[in-house]
Amino acid sequence: MKFTKMHGLGNDYIYVNCFQETVADPQRAARVLSDRHFGIGSDGLVLIKPSGKADFEMAMYNADGSRGEMCGNAIRCVAKYVYDHHMTDKTEICIETLAGIKYAGLKIKDGKVESVRVNMGQPELAPHKIPVVTQQDLSQIVDCPVTVLGTSYRMTCVSMGNPHCVVYVDDVDSLELEKIGTQFEHHAAFPNRINTEFVKVLDKHTVQMRVWERGSGETLACGTGACAVTVASILNGYTNRLVTVKLLGGDLFVEWEEQTGIVYMTGSATHVFDGEIAL
Image (tube, rainbow, N blue to C red; front, side):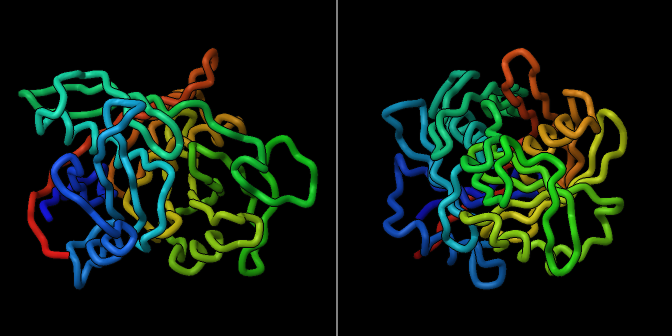
């Protein structure tokens, strides 16, 4: 099977062109290929497939083999892949995901995609649609308490097609993320598990975050997470509507439009290498 390894700010996936290749068992393939000791090494597997609804379909699987609804870093890489491999000559494309159809604008430099601006749609804030289980009848989960390992945190929950719990802390660098991240992911409040972002507000335009991704653990970047953090930061009054989100792998630029309610994310997409592997 031929594949391409790509990353968005260090959030790396194995990409397979399913116009040419067939992956019979993507759950198993994701687990095998993602293993950083015995496989290629990645945060998961992304299949680029034909779509009856859009220009292309993105099917993404986490490193543990679970299917993910959406990945902001991966969708930028898909956009770069299809343009750079001459599967399209359009600089505005639409991509089908489990979280709906997403629209990507491509910035081209020297004939290749340099960065991608993605219309991530409107955030979902209703608890039952994220989903989040609460003891109170709330229309939104904004600055609400949650207890993990005996410590009380304040969480704001957002869905960007996949569920996110945003927690504000004084210092993100010293967090024992391996210890607390998995406890958030499997907390009883989150029936479908959760992606958790730990955030420090730097100023009205800038935040710093680390992320524990459902099914993959800590990653260097999370596009949907950066969008959720921007929405949460605005809802809590911490930032303005255009935010630079500083992740371990680099910066994403996120805007939550007031009039339309649409979230836009802009960032890079990077080709690492091509290869072939027997599964």
